[in-house]
Length: 195
Image (tube, rainbow, N blue to C red; front, side, top):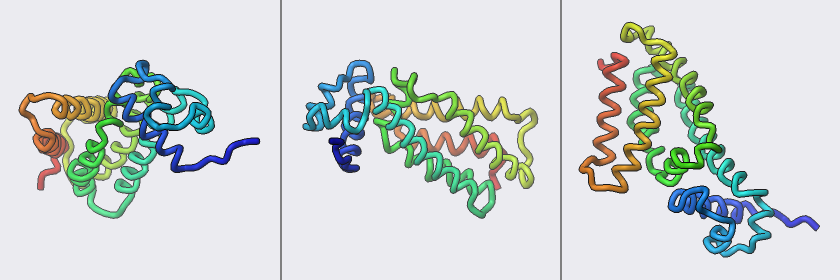
């Protein structure tokens, strides 16, 4: 007889796994660790997920889907493109940075399961549409093209995530707000979005 699935248990398993993967690393975390962390029997874990790999894929894909759908809504909403870019740097990115465990997983040895290159492509395509609409009212820098934007997305997105991870785990004297202020300044300047 198949067990009934409980969404709360599934979420508890994913949250515990996210914490363990971020703290110990994906490869150093076992299903036994997950059993200890959740208090669920091993059979319960396997009722919801076939393997540890499925758990990390689910964490990344569901986190990414939420993140991307909110970004997509923002880009599609009515409003001036420059205001949308400011909202991305001023509201959207700071929200992303609140989930350090998710950031750690995206950048960890579990990166094999994150398909980060595909996510950067999708993010680049979305931002191209926004920047093209912004370029109708603002003069973009010469030489700004898809390859430049894709490089910028990789440098800013991955660099931002790594920098925030480092600032939260060391005493280098840089605060997350400093990182965000720098990001906002450089993006707005590079896209000529200052009024």
